[in-house]
Image 1 (cartoon, rainbow, N blue to C red):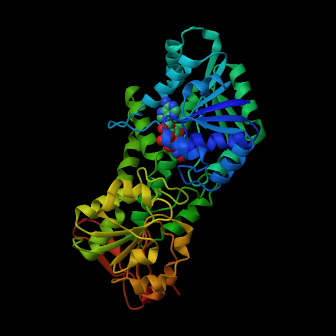
Image 2: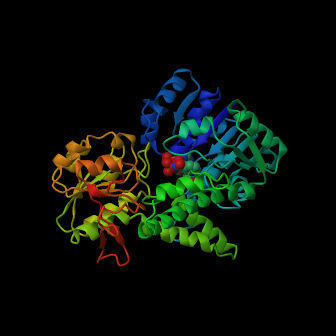
Length: 466
Ligand code: NAD
């Protein structure tokens, strides 16, 4: 089938490339000319495992082309997928300007029947809004020439290609049987179960799914904070909870909260959709509040341990909002860097993929290092912010030797605690109350002056579990 994808960001590019891989003829179109230039040379502007190889092979096979003109994309396809951004406005609402302009282009250049597929995450009512915009911009003004369906995307950055080929479900929101049948045919080779509903429900499914996942994360982070105070280990609590099939283990990893371009904006947007409909989503407001505090948890720990952060050298390992991507949108690292800079700390960072994106934000105010050992050099504390697998494999004796101090704050509960304590680090995970030393009644604790109520369990090698 002939398909155009408008927007070649994380979603549009992966979708276009995967559709080409299953045999469709795909035009990926973006208004950003430098992205298109890079893609034409076979260089993806984003990091996603396996993407470059698929771009190369599908371009060679003649199934994939990259262009900057909407006219060519609209005229030369029967299915047009809208995958442009819907970033948050200051008030939390989704900014619909990219979707509106894509819809206007479709209306302007439509030359015969088109199936328009909204893949961007959009507020309820957008399918109808897109219909109106297309009609308003379509000179022939013919009503029979197109259908608009909602087809929200569920891929995750870091595993986007695998998710596209092996998704849990394809949600289709359509009022037309003809349109639903056509989109099913497009995805047929993927053999993924379908769920067909009306556009409003499809739009709600996407926001509700992301909001539920964000809720799970904030829930376990609250439990983690309580675990620290009552002598429990949140990792064990999550495992024990997750064995219940009604709960499940996934998204119960305590840490420094959620980030990225989706959860923060989608939760805010759903709250706004509620407000506009006269309904207050109270739980989701708390989810945001918990996350706001949690994402700078390492700062509270540092303040508790070092008191004054001015002039202190701190290393940050990992900057992307999660492993497997270079995306730093709403990453906890940005808030942590900003806070540390405001307090006058010296920051040294390392990330395998996201350094350039952070440099675009913070410029020369922090030191960008070529590896984790260089980042740790002369630092009093190393803070792990992203669970890149390579960080688990580090030579921590070498890290220890490079550092001035011996604090490790593990924002993802990702490192091997036993190993680190044996090497002589003081190790601070999230939500784990560590065992008592032999003659101690309770773990030694530090009360943070700057963050009242925060209790830190100071670990010693002697406190290692037997
Ligand atoms: P992005 O910002 O990475 O990419 C959007 C692209 O659209 C940009 O390259 C921009 O230049 C282009 N664009 C803007 N207006 C255009 C127009 N009129 N015509 C053609 N191109 C245009 O965004 P993204 O992360 O890929 O997200 C896209 C949508 O998918 C959002 O609504 C997002 O919420 C949703 N989504 C994202 C993810 C994710 O993991 N990133 C997952 C599921 C859903």
